[in-house]
Image 1: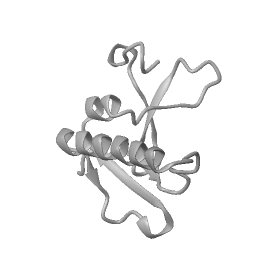
Image 2 (image 1 turned 180 degrees about the vertical axis):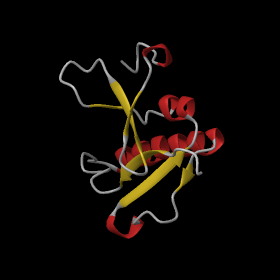
Image 3 (image 1 turned 135 degrees about the horizontal axis):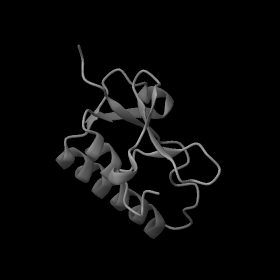
Length: 105
């Protein structure tokens, strides 16, 4: 049986929509390069089957702690107190409260 994959979908469209100078572009792409380098060092991988041609890329890890640290968590409730991870099958997995830091909740 395959391990659970926690996913984060990245959309490339609009990432520079607020840029008004070349410095803004440099800042945006520098920030993204650092983020993706960190993800690479954490062992996060790009799903080769994601459809990058339509501006979407799916990244995944099989480690819940890595997914949380990388910011893969999402909130579905209005009070933002319950965090979930999404799996590659679309299943929502509730993150145990003890795994969340104040930044995540």
